Length: 165
Image: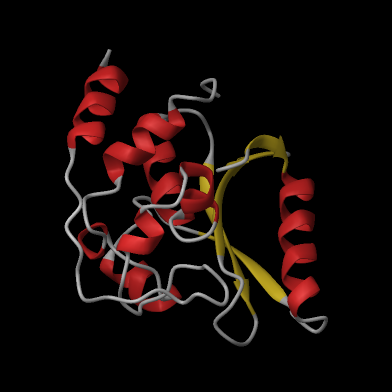
């Protein structure tokens, strides 16, 4: 199975540090450099806050006929609180798995408002593929090449832990 081959390749990868740094305050992916610290986090943490856009990108590549499409929760102002997920009708998927779309959104909003009671957001449908230079520039997210190693194989392995839609 392709997932098994990618899993073995992923485990054999050697991480090479770069000169980038992590935004330690919020753990979110930013256009600012150092991904090695982020890369070393466990998979759920990595794909929840930092590489959610990578997981969404891989999901729609693996399941193109599933009816799921990518969305972004974006702060109305400021740089904190972005989150990319995929959804079909009332069902959504992100690093925490499948759940009701309204629940995923409510949980994210609650976390952000715990940090800033005035935090507000908008939800926007995204194009496929998700990770493009335009997307990364507009939403201050990293591209595949900005990580110590290509994160797509890691996302495939992580995605294989969940049932297909």
